Amino acid sequence: MPRNAESTAFRSALEVIRGVEPRVADAIGAELADQRESLKLIASENYASPATLLAMGNWFSDKYAEGTIGRRFYAGCQNVDTVEALAAEHARELFGATHAYVQPHSGIDANLVAFWAILADRVESPALKKAQARHVNDLTEADWFALRRELGDQRMLGMSLDAGGHLTHGFRPNISGKMFDQRSYGTDPATGLVDYDRVAEAAREFRPLVLVAGYSAYPRKINFRIMREIADSVGATFMVDMAHFAGLVAGKVFTGDFDPVPHAHIVTSTTHKSLRGPRGGLVLCGPELADQVDRGCPMVLGGPLPHVMAAKAVALAEARRPDFAGYARQIVDNAQALAEGLLRRGAKLVTGGTENHLVLIDVTGYGLTGRQAEQALLDSGIVTNRNAVPQDPNGAWYTSGIRIGTPALTTRGLGTAEMDTTAELIHAVLSQTSAGVGPDGTASKAKYVLDPTLAEKIGRQASELLTGFPLYPDVELG
Ligand code: PLP
Image (cartoon, rainbow, N blue to C red):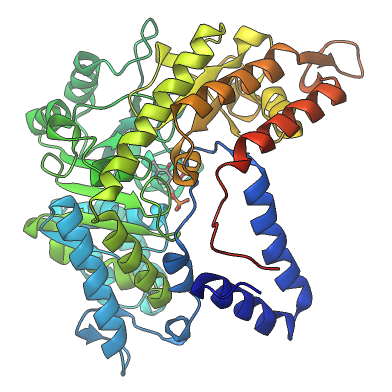
């Protein structure tokens, strides 16, 4: 029977859960087993520390705390104040920001908080002031109409989805695309890189209220100093969504022109990707936007999640330790080793490589769609996700790309040598998978042919690769 504190904590928790609904306890145990066995290359995922995970399972979950520190709409929030203040302090210190708002429940919420803060800062609207001061439920339909009328068609310029931008940067199916009149900047078709002259030209033509930088699938650094100059030249507020690369900013891999905090008016992030915290979001800004950002509740958010804020405080404290910088550096070294391993074996990569935590393989080089490649890799124990490539001929559903990222495997301790083996496994699967045919005999974008014996063999090799790098080695569920 393992006696270390982590094993005892998780075993006891599962025992208590099992007493009420054993199927949930079983699913939790199965999830750990699956995560331990699979080669997780999803660029937006990671493994939070036991301390971070444990900080979420407690009595803070029961507490309502709408409002801000010291100014709550509920009584008895003194302990929530403590953890929210700690999380905000760690965030400010870690990123060198003047103000941090740690209540957003997710990245999308953090972006909505930022958008409303920018609108409130930039647009004269009595209806917006009223909306910020009331609870959403207290607003009448007439209030909403007035808000819509007074805000008018404000403009947002962000990176296009197929160049690696995110849905929340103004795309139609997302609320941001309904709040703003949006236009996108893409990447240079020849290099795959952001062309700052083209961004400046688009900004001059479109005159956005908000210029957004940040991405989910762009494998390069962005020069935030230049982007700020572009924003200033047209009087736009410059917002950076660092959801994906916050860990690289925290670990001081992205510094100077590539650190968004000194250059942007407002920065948003998730806390669960390369930053390795709990699922959640945060907003950083200077004193000019701080009051508006703190109105995230009730404008966008209801009650914050105090248990998650407690976990954010733990994870941000971890990211402030000196060893986090080594982790962040290793994420990029690993991504570059993976990219080089793939290139050496003949893979086609968007932008020809990487400078961050992710690599985007253009799988049309293997005669596949992203959907076919994603499934074939999954059959072989390699977990990735399909992703559009710039000007994707297969659209956003089937796609032509596979996005792979190294934050999770780096947390497990895998290094550059293992990345070369990983590249070998990926290439072996993709080069031996072929497109299937649909019922009408034409090429299918979903069906594929992969010898199951090969998939099984690669799956075995993937799990062998992981045996030297146990996930949560101190946690034994028995
Ligand atoms: N912003 C970016 C750049 C992202 O990549 C994502 C998630 O993938 C989000 C925002 C949204 O984060 P969440 O899923 O926590 O809402």
